Image 1 (spheres, rainbow, N blue to C red):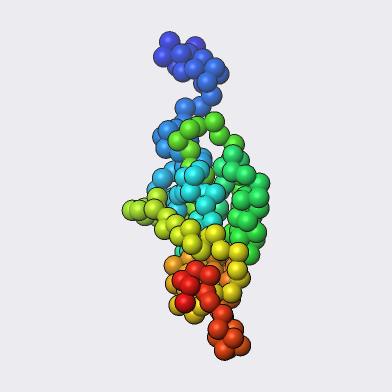
Image 2 (image 1 turned 90 degrees about the vertical axis):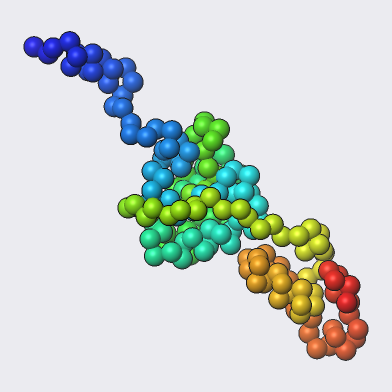
Length: 175
């Protein structure tokens, strides 16, 4: 027969399930341990246009194997990351959570990687680039946007020779 402490454990397991290791950590990192995380973006960051560049860079890491997306992320944003996972041959999964501190997107490895700064501060694309309706911009502005925000630069193309001869003005820098 079981002694009282084993009986209490059995009852606790029956009521609450098997105890988890680091449950708060796993809630934040969408079911993963922090030591496996390569990149973590908050819910707010996940919907930013610039976030895709950070996720692309993280998926290029040799240790990156899975991209996990919080199911609270809007479907139009989630679909971009599904395509990105497919294009890079990485596993994609979504996690449903009610935790307020849960991340929006997490790129992880199946083994511990112990990265220091996995939560990044995203460099936001200036409004002058976001608000322009023109698809053609000058070489200087194109270089700036393509270096700092590569995926966002796909919205633009550089002025051609004819544009410069005709005296076209860049809608961003007005030159």
